[in-house]
Image (cartoon, rainbow, N blue to C red; front, side):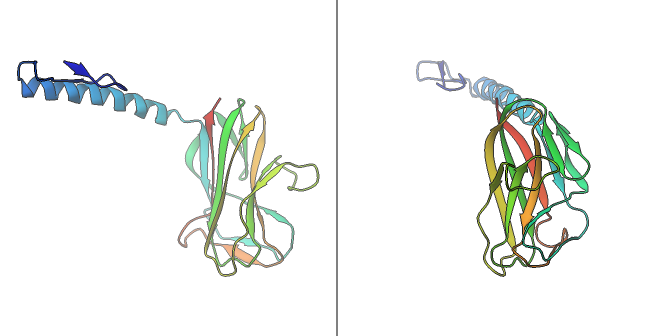
Length: 184
């Protein structure tokens, strides 16, 4: 019998006696074992996924507006979720943060993920921003991947460039914030 290079799955070679049922059974069991290990890793992902469950009015200011989320879609594992807007890392590592929403955006709106639960992005507050959106665009998001130490508070913000908008959780895509650990 030969074996695959990556997973070591056995397969029959020309010199092996033919036994299709046994070969398929052995292959199925090897695949199930490999896929089961992947499932176990996915089930243990560190992070949190939250969604807005009510309209969120964003005032007509040119500053940052902290987004709030009332519905936990994926319970926190390895991070804490505080109130309705802050994910805090429990261990150092490489984290990805994704924030998105659907509305009639004005030109110059963009999302940011800020480090620091109670302070707006700006002077002295590290933040990571996505691209500016075009006027009338209905979906926008940003995603950042950075190394954060344990105890880092992460919040989702929206810069609305002076226009009042409403994020509606029932249209196309709910406002959502996802934080997950990639490595570390």
